[in-house]
Image (cartoon, rainbow, N blue to C red; front, top):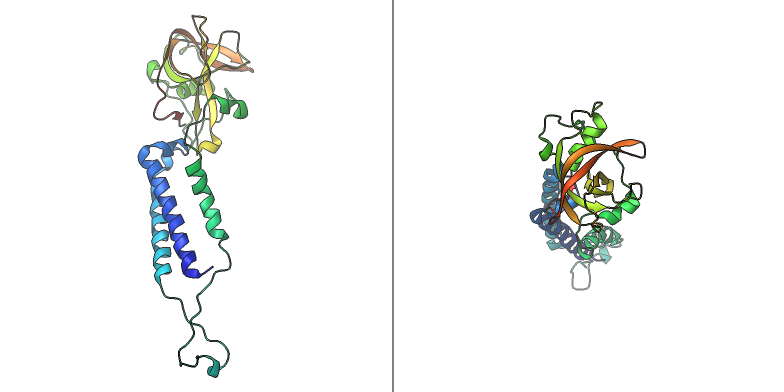
Length: 258
């Protein structure tokens, strides 16, 4: 492949990656892929991609170097002009490897993980909730302000749960029916992300509804009720004895961040 064409294609692919990340960042969907704390690094990466794209573009615009062949008598043609040969690169595989993630990002619609992902990843009441050493729950936080993640942290890191039992919870999550639970019970669940969606893990609070209504999996709900405790696989998990379950719209940010 001609070197100038190669550099031009490089510039296009790098610019495409920069535009793709910029659009995801501005739309807010980038946080469906990575933890929010890494957004500044993403901005740096976008600027780096723009810089590399410009470098490749200007390199493509440069005239190719001339090359001499044979002895001095063969360096020129009959008109006395030095022949010019285009510089070439051995392979375009480097562009292909960079292009693959861009194609995947464009072809596969962006959507957060749902209850169907729990079947593959599982739902754990003792998942790794620490990130950057900040794994402790805030015991002074108002009960109604705690998320599913906050309640799970309390049950994982507080040795005495008696002060929190009977407090009122008000949490949002999606429905997941876990076969380990008693009949009629279900989970109000969320995915938590430590670094990126690849390490996402599902957490949830058990809901004991006061009605017999069956809510389908993946339905986003708001649950209000008194918090008690229930054992699931030998671990104490927060149980909401529900006074009210209502369907809601999925939040703009479906993930929680430890």
